[in-house]
Length: 174
Image (cartoon, rainbow, N blue to C red):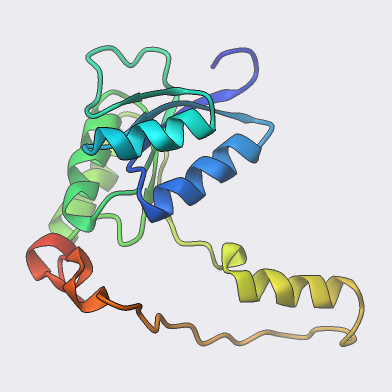
């Protein structure tokens, strides 16, 4: 840790990577130290916005990195999470974490062995509609809340059926 900030390497600078870069940068306890994406133009764009380093691959030395946030297409989640955990670094990986149960078991075992933190990121509080509902509750507009039930889905977008998410080899299916 540099000072009292956790230095984070973001792997994956696409749509969700951009969102994570914002959250990392916004947090007073974290520092976005490195953005890695196989598409150098994408890595560069995010890194420049947050005034940090970028690369198309992980550098040989990662001593200055304390933790990783892995936000890639599903088929790469396991690879990068395993690499980071093997280095003794903590990992927050986007859902689903990997593409099969065997990989997940291996990552959990590796995290325990190296005494690191391994977490799957899927936090509803960052969804716009949930954040708006929280604001309404905090303003007292609807009275005391006893419980909340949420149904959430993804309506897709134009061309969504052509994206990697719809390819079982890339996403793991499900």
